[in-house]
Image 1 (cartoon, rainbow, N blue to C red):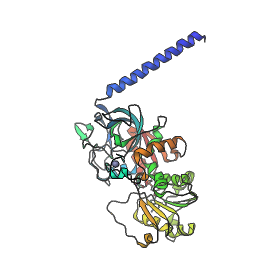
Image 2 (image 1 turned 90 degrees about the horizontal axis):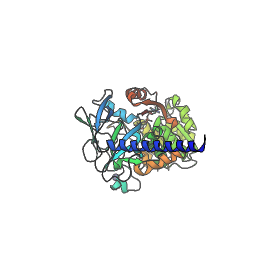
Image 3 (image 1 turned 90 degrees about the vertical axis):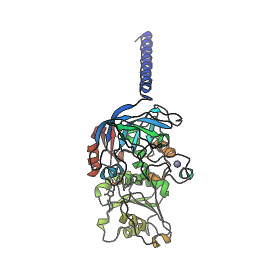
Image 4 (image 1 turned 180 degrees about the vertical axis):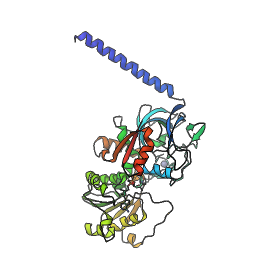
Length: 403
Ligand code: PAD
Ligand code: ZN
């Protein structure tokens, strides 16, 4: 090719790029400030499948952000809503573990702009409440978890379907092509990050990983026991490994879980059903008096007590990660604590969301951890009911729906 032709080719390419950029800008301009009609999975009633509907998504008001969702994970907490164990206002668009791209912003928004890659935050970080100002707490007072309202912070919804207002879920609502978030419920992330993977940082991964590195503060050379090797338990194992634990003992009644647990860092795996003695005594013997750190990642009262009893009596730390059954109380012998154990629990791995999510994405990009072992299925959004069947039958660890 002679030089003139190359120049013409380059100029043409440049002109085409400018045209495409202008188109993209116009597209944004054409939807900004307007209602967007798109597909969403609406839950009209509990114990019923989702129905894919055309919904109207209103533009963001002041301090709000409208995003195009690119990928969303399916979580057991979503299924708790469908089964009626987690009671929230209906009809609703649920889903809370996602990643997307900002489509438009409301007045006064300063931390994100159109085109930014973002992760919705099911736990907001307002930066102003007592919890946000405390160096340790992360359950921001503006959360929609303790008493679910099903709305934006201003008490209204941005979704309509067939003329009816549709509720929001955990300040996120990600089973939809577009959603609206309060600015305190969205974090800007690395523009190079793969959205279909890092969506897990919005919930399951951070919950497990943070329980080890942030809540328990696992120390190098320590011995850890992780009760429950589902998706969240595997992320706890990853956190223990990243913190430098020397031994990580996985505890699960399902031996099919062991291979993956070992792949992400468990040094041995045991089943309580293989022993005549209670599992805490087995763990005490294995560790010469009790493990340094234990984690309950199942959500059962008996295993919460077993995990506590299996950590060292004078300095062991036990963390509750599993969500306990609704309105049930535990009975424990206070001697378990009087001798010096610490018993803790945390939502979202103790991480302050808006501060920590971008940092965790950067750590993922720097290959500090991998999310691949947690993602067993990727399906198109329309197959959402199939994805929930995979979760209910225990065939998936994490299914990611893509749009
Ligand atoms: P999962 O159902 O995939 O994994 C649970 C694991 O526990 C499975 O591998 C079971 O085989 C195993 N198991 C069940 N019963 C026993 C038993 N008696 N002894 C030993 N092992 C057993 O769940 P998951 O990993 O998605 O979630 C685990 C819990 O974490 C669950 O309660 C979920 O609601 C909770 C959770 N908490 C937060 C938070 O912020 N604290 C966030 C996300 C999930
Ligand atoms: Zn706050």
